[in-house]
Amino acid sequence: MFYEMRTYTVQPGKLKEYLQHFETEGLPIISRHAKLIGWWYTEIGALNQVVHIWAWESLDERVKRRAALLEDRDWLDRFIARATPLLIDQESRIMLPAAFSPIR
Image 1 (cartoon, rainbow, N blue to C red):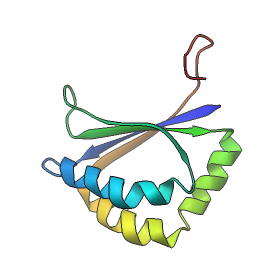
Image 2: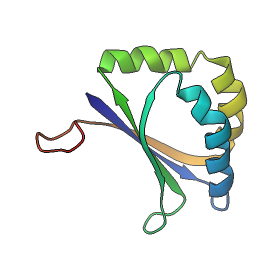
Image 3: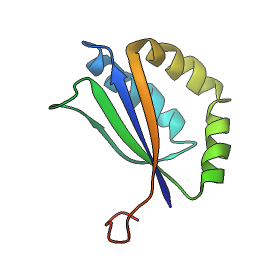
Image 4: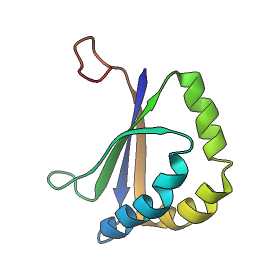
């Protein structure tokens, strides 16, 4: 199993709007293409960030499903069009579980 940790920095003052938009529009759409493991936002440290983790059976599956997501008109029109202006930065990392990790 592969895990992708995505970190987005949201414009100051726009975190609540981004969270609401993701929950109502983004999550139902992206859930057709990816498996969500967890979704958080920061309270201490680097502020205005959201961090989410997605599970993939393989990197090939990730490539295939991400390509399908990027062709999904609902995703592009209903979520991305409104979400992108709320963001400052984004980062994506592929994470591999250690042998002793409770999540494998």
